[in-house]
Image (tube, rainbow, N blue to C red):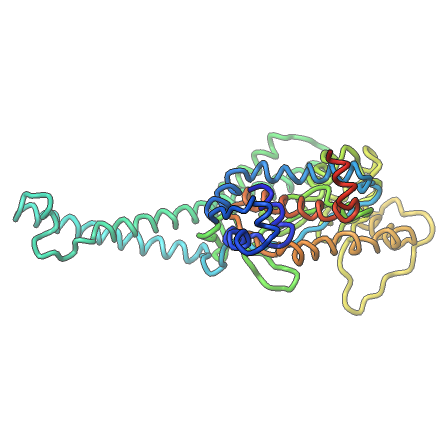
Length: 412
């Protein structure tokens, strides 16, 4: 099963049904399956049951690439891409519609319960036998099933509503805490209790926007805007790529459409996976924030990692300013300092390599591994599948670099 999944994901055959067909008519799959044809349900259950172990293949593939000298950690690039979730955005409902639908469903359930009680009372009055509980004419015998269906629907609506309200409260809490921390920094004070209190007050008052949505097929996925400008039900897949051989050193999935929250976590994960911090980290404007600029400065002091972070997109007719000269003004903000660094000759040379490092990796995964859309649902399922795709990408790089002879010698 493991060989089938690795080979299937590496060659772009990810569907369990497609793997079952390949085991019958493809010589490579037949060889890996020992000339057996496992049922697609067995393949699917194996993948779901051992998802965490399969995701661990990513770190194993990375260690294999490191042994071959393919990972140098001199320069890495961090970027994100939107992966379509296994859910249609047509199965989503906005908060405003949820409230209306929930009220109507509750009214329908109440009416059905009254009707059911009336039918039961009439049946008991005419016939004490349980087989005749809903009358002797056979009508409305499916009422309990209809009532059960509505109650299940109401439970889903209430769960979706609770999810949206919890997300709105969490967002308001973090925003208020961050605002209070900045206020205290300007005042030269530090009171964590006041920060927590401000967050709790904001969360209690938070109300979701009427257009905030929840999906019934995959509730953990989110509506996101992809690179083509279309809004899709998706997850935000993150990757750190080593520039030497385009080996992925860190891979993760988030439910936040913005990349800003992933800068520190992804570089930390890359360092944990490889045991080393890169000398340079290239990131685009999607990661630019005051928090990340401060984190970049601290990372350079602590680990020697110099970050080149774009500070914003240029307008269509805007020109890049000339390289700055002279001493940096003492009043310059972190953003101004970063923008100034990127306009220098070394800054331009370093940042110009970002697209050449990370963008081809996403293209190869989408094309060679058919990884544009996820098959597993839920954030954990999406994360496990993305790391499995990253592992297969690294294995392709290892195979092409070492060849069959070198790889066999390395693995024993």
